[in-house]
Structure formats: C-alpha cells, structure tokens
Length: 261
Image (cartoon, rainbow, N blue to C red; front, side, top):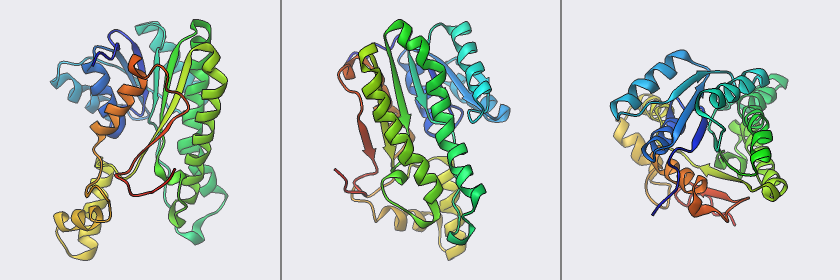
C-alpha cells in the first residue's frame, strides 16, 4: 500500500518517548521529514540516539506544549527548518492520577494543563498555515480514559473527553479547507511508563513481573496490551492519502476492553 508520506513534514509533540517516539520512527521510515518536540532535553537526546540507530535523522525541539508561546515557537522552527507542516501528531502530556479525596483545584488544572491545552495549542499553531494551503492532517492520540470514568483518573479523563469533542468539532469546521482531524484512543499500551507500573505492582504483590503482566492482560479480550508501534501504524494510515476521506473518526485501540459504539 502506497501511503504517500514521502517528504511530508510531520510535527510530533511528545515525540521523544512512548507512542510519540514510535510515531517518529514510523513516519521517518516512510520517508517523511520529522520534527519531534518534548519538554526534556535529556529525552530528546535519547530519542535522537534511538532514531539514529535506524539511520533516521529528525529535528528535535525543546518546548513545553502547555505554554502557547513554546508551542508556537516549535511550529515556527519546524517550518523554518523543514518546510510547511503537513501533518501534526499530538502525543504530548500525561495527566496524573489522584485518590478521590485529593481532587482539588490544582488536580483539575493539572489534568487540563498536562493533556488538553498542549493538544489545543499545537492545533492552534498549525491551523492557520494548513487553512492557507488548504491541506493538512491532524491526529490526536488521546486515550480511552475519556470514555469511561475512573475515580483515580477523573481530571485526566475529563481532559480526554474534552479533546474528543474538540477533535470532531475541528474535523467538521476544517473539512472545507481540505484539513482532516482524527483521534486515536489507545488503552493500556506497553510504554516505559506502563512497564514501570507493572514492576511496581509486582513488587507490591510479591509476584514476578511476568505474573503481574499476565494478570493485567488477562482482562483484555485480545489477551494483551497494545504496543506503541501498533498505535503508530494507525496514525500513519490516518495521515496518509489512503485515509483521504476519513475525518472526525475516533478510533479505539484497547483490545476490545471497552465495548463502545
């Protein structure tokens, strides 16, 4: 299948690790010109080294996407160095979890600042150029936490739910300009963060990591967690010419754990 992503300029927020890094690898392998953004110089350096092992060169930019000025600077530098942005992949930020009696104003703001505003700022930064060129694709990697309420993830889930609405809303508004906006809702995905959680759970229960992983995965209809590269593959499709008539879609990727329509 020809994806038509060669020489496309792709900006990936949160591209230094996890699903974002997997997206950077996938787009670079398709011949796209990739910029990754992260708050951490250390994570960016590590990502560059990882990508270099596969002979991929990317533009690595430091920026806090929760700050509008940082996000605008990242987008402007990407366009100066690589050219007009064709594809935005939002994968920056992770909301914290809170015990039910710890939900205060700070907790609610943390959820929105960590996840909602980084995505909205990035979309605001690339949208004018995409409108002017009358083309573009935006993929928001959100999460199933916005579909089902979890007591320890109410603020993060609220941010996810808000992003789903913004995603489909912009898809409707921007279609007239040839801009497609879609979302992916991963469930638990085997990133470094999740693997650290499995290790902690194993220690707390006095079992092996393999046993802790098996217990968690046994609840999933497909019998396992997702992998970052699987999410990246769907992002590739949504950004490609093969998905030229797909917009406003919210794609669940949780192995069938959450039966939603």
